[in-house]
Image (cartoon, rainbow, N blue to C red; front, side, top):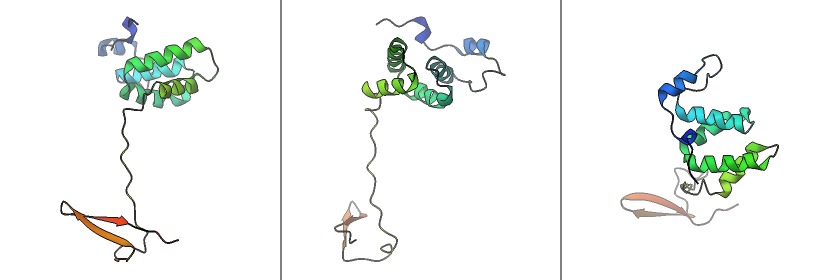
Length: 134
């Protein structure tokens, strides 16, 4: 698929020429303009901040592909279909979540309990919970 001229990054001068301070109070950067454009196309002005965040963090090609899918579909809830399509395309698979640490209950803090084993690794003390009584 060939990219059109509208999918390229706009210069600051072009954005400032189109900028109306009374109407465009949310736009000061190019990704914000694109996020606002997405919210207009999807008829979802309530969630324009989420589209600005997506325009800032996601590759533009993925957003363009999902937008073209939604505009061709002709549904009422375009925003929901857009987010579904992004999920289906694997837009969030590249982000790795860090594992959560296990926190001790307040009554075990500061005490050594027989149920908690202490192990040292690389001169750092880690506590491993063996069994949690209920």
